[in-house]
Image 1 (cartoon, rainbow, N blue to C red):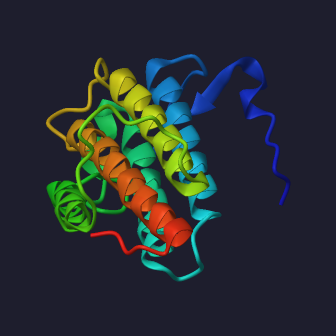
Image 2: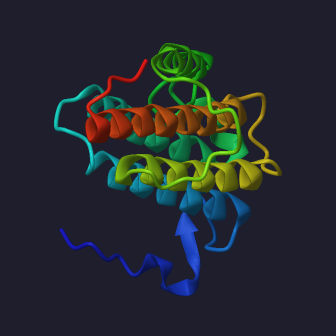
Image 3: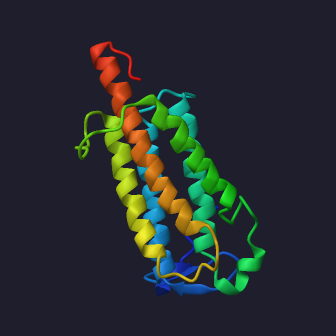
Length: 182
């Protein structure tokens, strides 16, 4: 199998379940940014211990972004073909992000002022991913996505990434000072 198909040489790209749109179509732009976010999560994951809680959480989020990208890459006339949790973001996926946020916020003290990113590589990568997710969130704002959960998912994902970055700052600080974080 070859990686290139030449189908996009005309400036179009294929949608899930059929159809083609220009490569600068707003839904393709939004998916490109979601793809960037997924790569940034991979960079953060490269800083995690294999099979650690951080590693496992990031793998789950990377896979969930595939679900989100599938939904965004589907023409509204084909939304009925989407499968919950596989090609369609679900309210349960959003609720899981909220549960992750609630669980992780118990592990560090909330900052008392604006955060200056960069205290550690993992937290910095998570902050970069968060800003990319925020851009994706802005781009999906104008898309016809029906009553789906893409927008709430991206909103909660950016909140989770902020939370994860603060958690990892605490982990980084405790490993440097020998003091346990809360």
